[in-house]
Every structure is written in C-alpha cells, then in structure tokens.
Image (tube, rainbow, N blue to C red; front, top):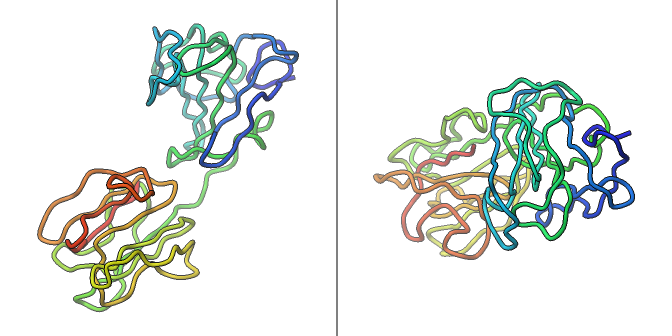
Length: 258
C-alpha cells in the first residue's frame, strides 16, 4: 500500500531527475485518482488553494493547490496539483491523515500528484527511496568559509542556513571552501570564471586575486560588495546576469548561503 494515497498503489508517471524534475508525479495504479494522505507526522507550514488549471504558470502558482508539511528533523513533504485541500496552515497532522484530493490545478497537464521531499535546508532531494519508507534522519550541518586577501588567511567556518555570513566586510575574498556544494568563482584580476570544484577536495578561487562573482549549484546564496551592500539572493547558476552573485569588476568581501 501507499504512504501518500489512501486506497491505492503508487504508479509513478514521471520520475525524479535532478535539475529537471525534482519530484515524483504519481497516480493510483492503473491511472486512477485518489485521496492524498500525509506521509509522516508533522505540521502544515504552507497551503495554497483556489488555483485553477493554469498550464505554463510559474513559481508557487505552478504548484496549484498544495500542502507543505514540516516533519521531524526539519524535512518537508509537498503535495501539489490538488483538486481540494482538507487541512489548514498550522495544523498538526498525523501519518495517514487526509490532506486533499488529487487534481489538475496549476501547471499540470492531467490529473496527478506532484510529490516532493525537501531537506532541512528546504532543498529538494530524491523522494524515490522514501516513497513508502520513513524520512531520512537529520543531516549533519554543512559548513563553508572564505579566504581573506588582506589578512592572508582562511576565516572561520560558518554553518549554512544559520543567518551568518563568511567574510570580513572591507577585505576582499580570494577563495571559498564549502561542504557538499559544487561551485566556482570569477577571478576579478584575470576576468575569467575559474574551474568548478566540489566538496572540500579543492577551493574555488586564486588566493590573492579578488573574487567578483560566485556560482553555487543547488543553493540560495548572495554576495556582499566590498565597501558596499548585500546584493539580491540568487538561486540560479548559469551564464545570464541573474545566474551568479556579484558584479564584474567589484570585489566581494562576504558570501551567505541559506
């Protein structure tokens, strides 16, 4: 039996694909509809209702009518494209409790459930291993740090998502280390993007050369300009003007990842 469908067996119509479709699309076996139930105990932290079928919609609107639940250890489940929602924000729910009914709201092209699991940093992970099993245990904290080009040393580690930043206002940074993330930086002096690095196998940067841009894969991040202010949060990592944090030609003295 299913942990997210009341009466039926899960049939996956669109699997999880990293950076393409970071969720599972599900119907009841043999292409039937069903009532949606809570995967695990938790608290409803967000709902959206009143959204019709809107192919091509974006942002939260694309989810249509949905329920988002926060679970033990900070994990989240999200149930989207619902026809109707039976719970309200702030409600405590138990495993197997009815949340709504499968539908076709938002950016959908047929009745199904769009099911996501997000980690404690609110980043989507592959829900496939946990579809009918308990959610994973709490992840260890992720750390990152920057190199101070003025003091010529690595600054202390800070924790992702705790509201702190890595850097020293007024002193440009020349390198970045980060747990788990894939990232690269733009060398202000050379005017080029340096190679991608991942985990702590290497750092991103060229110590002594100021950084004026940074890209971090699968993260929400921002940069602070030396003798300036914080730039807007970035979630992309592409070659467009909104695909990196920074401004070419202006040194960065701090970064923050949330």
